[in-house]
Image 1 (cartoon, rainbow, N blue to C red):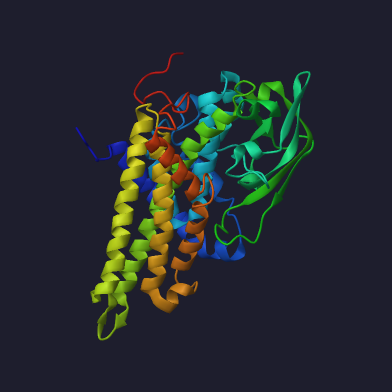
Image 2: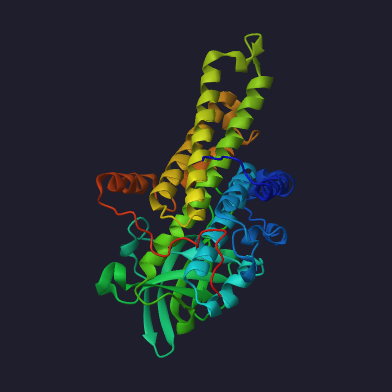
Length: 400
């Protein structure tokens, strides 16, 4: 039986996240964007509400909720400001859930518990200056010397890097093996040879922080390797399944924000002796936004349901990310059109919506990469398998 209703716990979380976003995020969004300022004061506030460990089990310091709950938080935060959503989808989706799925018990106690509690912040270091969609083109290396690995390389466009305590980094331990030669490591803040430079001048997401990360003969204990040597590529892809999910839900929130702003303006703006909402072509733009919103939400809800069931969901999550992010760009573009000349100025938030939305079609897989992935599934070139890429089904007790 199909049931699209949220349960009571999810509704309460949704209300709390929306209230937090409205009171703590939205009022500062324009100023933070203009100043290119990341409001680090939000982090402890988000931690106090359990948002930084929303779907991490309670035994590891989290709130113990499900994937749909993670999506609800991301949608609510991005409705107010994309930069706030970035914190959750990166810290929780890309980093913490990866530690939960792939980490040893010792690693979970050391790294995951303080992250779920919000005492430490995690980021995800996959992209390099010359390696984005082509993951195997990365140049970072990790050479084992006794009980340490020595890491060298540079990572680029790493969200939260300037404030991160734990860097989930991928590097080649054996380049000859290609995908089977990548490994994953947790590099801790303050490690010798680790340096971070903040990136400025972004078109959008100016209220978020991102940076480049340099590793110069950085020693990382073997105990900080995540998974086995050579499992890095699979770990990275499983992480992206969760990061893309949060991004899809967040982009849906941006579509909703663009639509609501358009409706409000169409009802108040007068032209030709009546509100412009009465003009047929304005109605057409609002209707298109509605269709984008409803479809995007249903896609991420389905992906979240599949994750909750422990089902392989790479295809569904990819589709949700692709559709919702492209939909966010379209919805924001329509919002600017509805607002006319005012939409092109920062007097209204819709120009910021557009700039923020544009970034989402580039990271965690460009729209072109997701199109190829969907085609590969359709043609049977890609199999429906997802080794260790999801949590056990919610409601099923884990073995101690």
